[in-house]
Image (cartoon, rainbow, N blue to C red):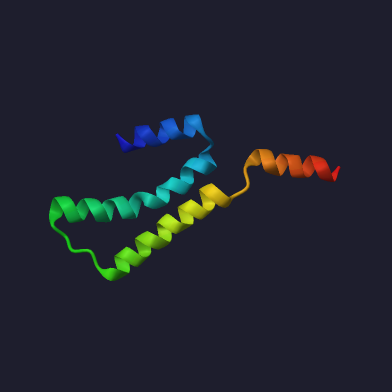
Length: 77
């Protein structure tokens, strides 16, 4: 199911934009293990999850889009 959803995301966006969200895999696995397997979550795992979430936010919200990069190249010529 998740692989088909990822393939659909690649169709709708680009592979590089979709690949950023693969970083959520360990976070989702950690949450799933907590709820379904009764695993404990350590403070280090929480810090790691926050770093991953922050990195994805920085990449998706503050990264330059391809259109902006192309316009920058056109302005230089």
